[in-house]
Image 1 (cartoon, rainbow, N blue to C red):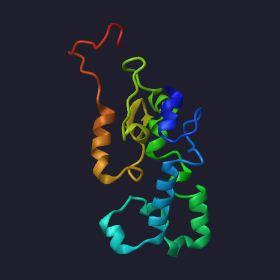
Image 2 (spheres, helix red, strand yellow):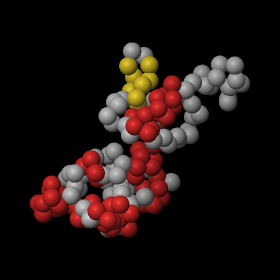
Image 3 (cartoon, one colour):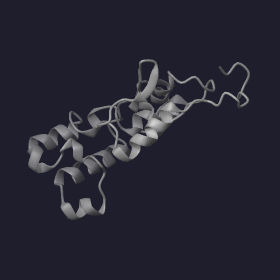
Length: 158
C-alpha cells in the first residue's frame, strides 16, 4: 500500500517528502512556479494559487530566482508545508502521531500542523501562520474534545 500511495502521489517511496524526478505532478509544479513567476495581473485575477507571500514574481526574484524556484531550493515546494507530503503514508503517520483516537486510522486536517501545546492546552501555533478566515476554525478544532457523556467508539478508547 505504501508503494502504491507514494507512487500515486508521485512521491518517492520511503520518505514521502520528495517527488520523483519524472511525473505529472512535476509538470504541475513547474507550471505553477512559472505562472507565479510571470506575475501577469489579469491571469492572477482569474486564478491565484495563493503563493503571493513567497514573493515569486520576476520583479522580486529575477532569472536567478526562477532557477532557484524551479530547482526547489526556494518557494512553496522547498518546504514540506504543502498538501502532497501530508497525503502520503509517511506524512499521515507523522501528522497523526499525537492523536489518540481510533488505532490504525489516519486523519487529515488543514489544522493539524497549525497547532501546538502551550501550558497543556492545544492552541493555534501562530496568528500570522494561519489565514485569518481559517483562524477561528483552527481554534475551534484544536479545542474540540470527545463528549464525556457520549458512548465510547470502542472499548478502551480513553
